[in-house]
Image (cartoon, rainbow, N blue to C red; front, side, top):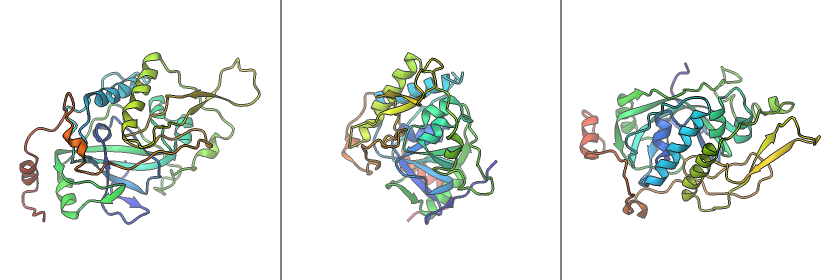
Length: 311
């Protein structure tokens, strides 16, 4: 079991990432195992997860829950316990970032279950293990990209962490167990030069779930021009001597609110990857069905921080 604590390239002590719901809770609950970004992970080790202020609407929650039901079903897993609530503007818990690969590497890495390979569909895939959640989510403001938690918030939060029973925990093997940064973009690409990844057969329900998840994620993107995915065509009846690809217009899955990646290196269009700032006007638009944390967060927070003074 890998030990906690951040191993980082930047100046991070208690790194935190703000994500939109429902993706934030899905990651902390261990259902989501890959966090997709348009930039590589700057840390290894513990990463705190904070939920942004935008309240998820019913259709977004349903689309993402359907997506995860389908990709887990690919590996025969049908009993998934989704979060009862998707609280916003809260510190939710943490995961261990053990590596970062390109989407091309994740899709072709056959050591991973097929469902995980389907999940990794962004430019850079942050590989996450050992999710833990806070018994009492802490109300706080988030920021863009990776930032440090305030020391006193960290000291209070670390006391309230509990382990999570993930539906299917994944261990991502490091090329060099002594080097926490050995699983990085390009680190395993050479192993695919003379091999082909087996194609993942998609049922109609899986394809529909992928399309629904794509539509849910693009609401957070400035640029709606989605790049086309390509998957190796390994059919034995193929007559072409050259490697073939199957172009799938609606099979890209942006993770959270971030831009979609591309398996094809020459894809050109770009999308935004920023997290909506706290206090946005979207908070004033209530969804049809709110899955939010009940109660008075300020009182809960004060109780959780008993003995500590946050100024």
